[in-house]
Structure formats: structure tokens, C-alpha cells
Image (cartoon, rainbow, N blue to C red; front, side, top):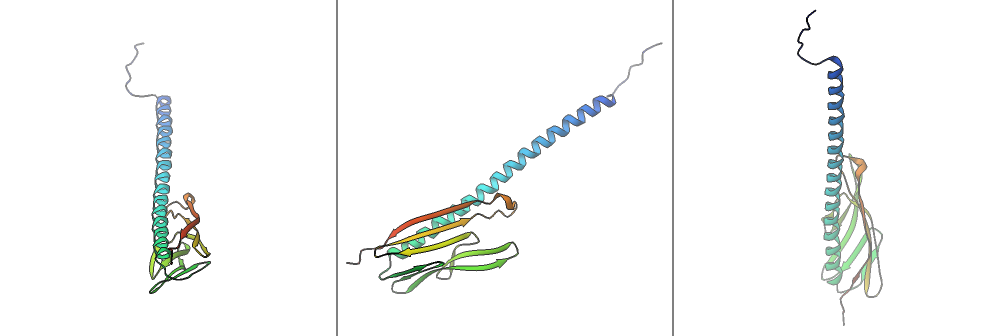
Length: 159
């Protein structure tokens, strides 16, 4: 008998190639998924850091520019100057769940991320404790948390 020349792959060769391609595709897919989750997490953290910096700067400017007593408490900080300046926490409902905003004279300084906001004062300083929760719009399990704890803002010398 003469041997015939056959072209193509055997069934076993096709199965091995298909399995190898599937493993490679799953590996690349999982790597891309982890990179994407990390990118989203870092974006939420950057947004939180920006909001915390703006909030602390606004608090600092308002307290240092005050000319009289600062009334502090949970979810509110009132600074008296020529006009009353108020930091308040606004609770609202969204389709994603309850959200808290830090409002300064009607302008949102921190939106959707405020966890807690507590202030206390003594004769010459204001202590601020604030926590922010990062919001991940796509992957709920990659939220981040940041706190500004015991941030002391010295009031200006009134003498």
C-alpha cells in the first residue's frame, strides 16, 4: 500500500491548540480585568483626595478668617464673620443608595463621598474629623476610604 499525503490537523492537535488558546485568552482577560479594577480604584482615590483637599482648604480659610466664635458639632460648623458661613452635611437618596454631601454656603464642597463630619472647638483652634468613601460607579466592591482625622486649624489672633 502506498501512504497517502494528508494535509491539515488531527482532532487531538485541534483540541490541544484550542485548549491552549482558551487558557491564554482567559489569562489575558483576567489580567485586563484586574488592571481595569485598579485603574477605577485609583480614579476614585484621586477624586477623594481632591475633594478632601478642597474641603480642608475651605475649612481653613473660613476658620482663619473668622472674627468671632466658631460653633461646632456633628454635621455642622458655623463660622461667624461679617456674614455667617456655614458648613452643613446634606443627606439625600439616590438610586445607588443614600449619599452625603458637605455643603459650604450653598456650594457642594464634597459630593457623594462624605462618610462622617465632626468638629469641635476650644478657645484657639478647631478640630475636624472627616471621612470620605470612594464611589466606584462600575465595581461596587472596589470602594476606597480616607480620613482626615484631628486636623487642627488655628484661629487667627484677635488681639
